[in-house]
Image (cartoon, rainbow, N blue to C red; front, side, top):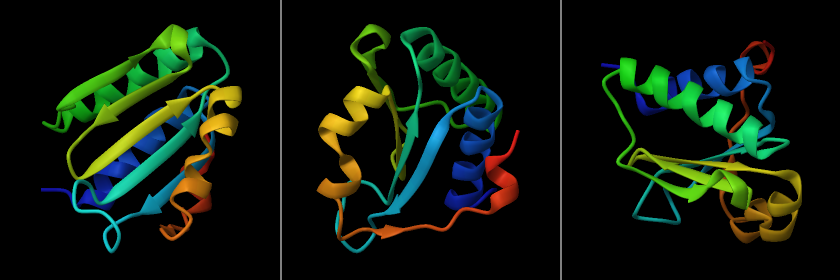
Amino acid sequence: MKSTLDLIYTAISAAVEKKGENIVLLDLQELFTITDYFLIITSQTSHHTSAIVESIDEVMSKEGLPPIRIEGEYEGGWVILDYKSFVIHIMEPDVREFYNLERLWARAKKVNLPDELLVS
């Protein structure tokens, strides 16, 4: 079975394939008990959000890990995919700037992602 980070990297690859941008992974293990990681991805439009969500859902389901729940509306600019040990936030730029999760969780460690992972 893949590790949590390997599963997150699988999700990142699916997002990058659909041109997800400004990808940030926050390690919350020392701060939060509900989940270990937040993965934050920028999408440009509701259609783009939908494409990223569908791509991630497809690859994760193939890994035997469908989301526990999906929250948000594509038209609302923010969709959350909950995989229990990690939560993926797909946000349009204005929503991401407004909520600024990176600032909200500033005490979280930012995980350095491999460069090759971020190139489609």
